[in-house]
Amino acid sequence: SQTIHQWPATLVQPVGSPLSLECTVEGTSNPNLYWYRQAAGRGLQLLFYSVGIGQISSEVPQNLSASRPQDRQFILSSKKLLLSDSGFYLCAWRGARGTDTQYFGPGTRLTVL
Amino acid sequence: QKEVEQDPGPLSVPEGAIVSLNCTYSNSAFQYFMWYRQYSRKGPELLMYTYSSGNKEDGRFTAQVDKSSKYISLFIRDSQPSDSATYLCAATGNQFYFGTGTSLTVIP
Image 1 (tube, rainbow over the protein chains, first blue to last red):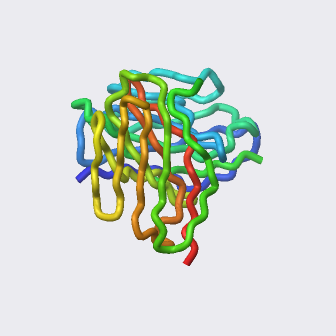
Image 2 (cartoon, rainbow over the protein chains, first blue to last red):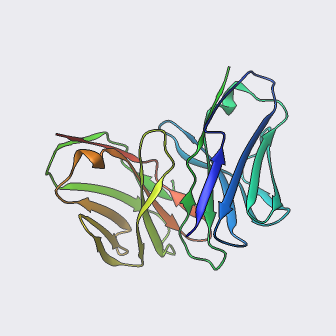
């Protein structure tokens, strides 16, 4: 069965510090991968998605970036965090054969102080 | 207009009640519809998945899609305190579109 991992689970970072969140998927190959941010009462905001290694599409221009160095690894980064980057970050995967469901990881709660 | 609209609630019901959660969507081309359950500080968990119109039942949960009115529903029978969570609806076209979630509390 497929499993999706995210770490760290929680993170408290000062403004201006760098960020690296990691997501890995097990039990599937060539998945479509997604990064979302969830703010209270505002639903899920799609940040990035990837259909393959090195292929990243950005949905929201901001100080965040994403990379996919391996088939089942998706990384969310920032060089300098802003207060507004605080939120709950979720990684998700979708089956490469076009199964129209998404499966989410456990999330990372980021607080920028 | 958002692609998927959902009443945020909150919704509070006594244990054993029937719960009805609803969403509307705007694009008639959507064909896949999902419900997710999200406990506090956890990632959303896929609960139900339906294709096109009709009903799908899984234990105490029934998902219903009415494409003529662009209406998505989730019914929970014999609700339990463990059902207390936020429920997200979603639809897919070229992308995934999510509702903002309805917060449900089942009171023992």
